[in-house]
Image 1 (spheres, rainbow, N blue to C red):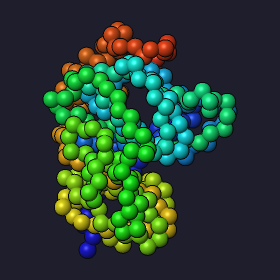
Image 2: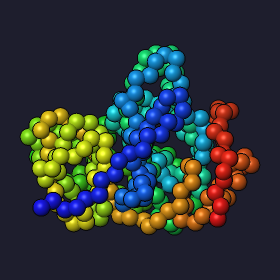
Image 3: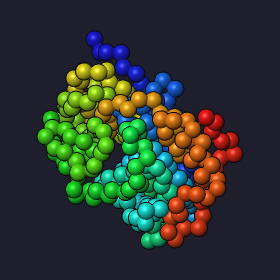
Image 4: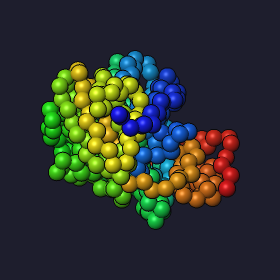
Length: 292
């Protein structure tokens, strides 16, 4: 008999300009899986020449953002001075630490043209002792991400270690993030981690012979050793790692202390965050502020 696994359905959020994401974490039933406490799936989105899906400069504290594209491109700029084009297959890990500001815009060569966008943006909690570290950005090109085949499935080890392969992405706590492509007849034994969850990005897959609903997250039970398979083409991601305990979330801020969220809100409203070089726009603070 299959174990009783928690299934999380996404909430749809319009981020502006018709750019809609499916937000799976945090959920009422589950804040995090391992260190992952935010999971957004966007696209595939068909954007017209006139569409503007730019994300203006905004702040973060106490977390790391992980951006991974299947299609499209975006231009990242942040307050540390990094300017980085993000393309499919690369892993982009931005550590906010004590505070960072960044923008995500359509690259100039794609403006005014029809384009597609599809990808995932996740947030990872930092260990409590690291919440105030210096901000940083790490870009790992697609060619440097380990790729291997296990049980017919094609894997990319985006973060962490699995099946003897280790990602070059630097992390501050045990973290696992896999991109898994399956065809009919493939069967993959899932690698271990203290906490794990599966999310079907595209297609149809099964877990121990039971169908996995598309665009749903299934949280695995600790210690179980299930078999992931497919009857056709499918794409699934596995996320997990060691849990870091409860975090307080408000707007773009994460902290183990509520009063830190209040301070960050005050700092953004007062213009005390560092600026992104070359940017003059910004996303204003929401009217309702956090309370300690």
